[in-house]
Image 1: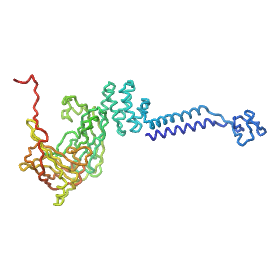
Image 2: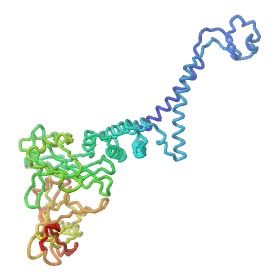
Image 3: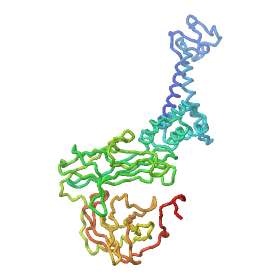
Image 4: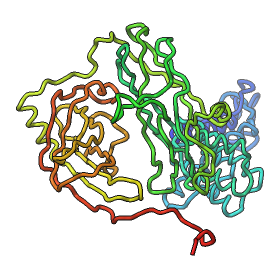
Length: 506
């Protein structure tokens, strides 16, 4: 956009110079000889005359005369000067700002800042939002300008193709504090606070599952914005065949856990966590009657964001509550967006994930690649609870994919902890952002005996279709022997209900 503006400014200067030239030269009225010095019409003077009767200039000198009387156009000249000077002033101001480092946004009118916010480059749009926010905080904008700034911010937020700057969200939040944002405007602000994409496997097997990865790719809110909510499937169809919108997930105790939202959201850009939930994984069942071949998967996604209550539990909101009529009540507050994905449906007997047969050499390589294992056992933290065990495994070096149920064998009991996979498992990811490791972490109530235990991984190939990113799975048991147990990670703490002083009995 900046390059286009520069081209327009240079074109304006060029057009102005052309108009000045044409207006100054004028239009030729006849073909009489004219004195080049004073433009006097020499009709009847030449060829006999020697000097110009008007100015006395010699007429026998080379190029002393020219052909045709011309009339100039002062208005055209003035217009050309205006077109040439105005962009020059603007470019000069820009060059001054570049050379001196001065912030030229402070001298721009509100209308220009709003135009830059919607049309200029991301850097100029960000600077325009920051300047409007500064003027708003300094009480330099009147009510009309604040309202137009809020509408500009909402328009930028709703245009997902434009990069977002937090300053535009802060404009809405600041105007809301000042009472200049209506409920309808803030509802629009909430509805467009996140940008979500959906990813699935390229092929879907008849009678199998269609895994869906829902990812928050952008948060479009203010630094002080705090929103909670969820995204869920409203309806889905594959090749025109309607699908059951209930979500299935790979579970520890059963083949699939049904229900729940696809992704829970917690938006707090001003904190160091930003958005605490950015990915969600679920699966839809592929019916056996879906036509084979290339197909279009159509998904209507419901996105509901609300302001969390000041005190937990006072909002009356339950994520995708089963209470009758809840969905219809909240639909006006949701953003419903359609997602179209290309999928190829294949016969039921097609193997989407390759099963790799175990060999002694490959099993040893798998064991060697999973040496980064950590087990932590915590004490009881409530009167009726049990100790928790945490299992963390780095799977980044595994030569073959994993989809295994993880157990801890302490010699007395076999404790099932979770489903370990090298696929895209949003519930078990662990590690700091930017880390080169790809760890999986699981927790379960279990009372582990002893200080050295074995970690047993048993393949569950039926669950492999639930995870994206799995091309092959090792079809064999893996045993990691003599893994130390770290105990007392947290100090023992018993949580008891609080009792008011008035209710205490002597």
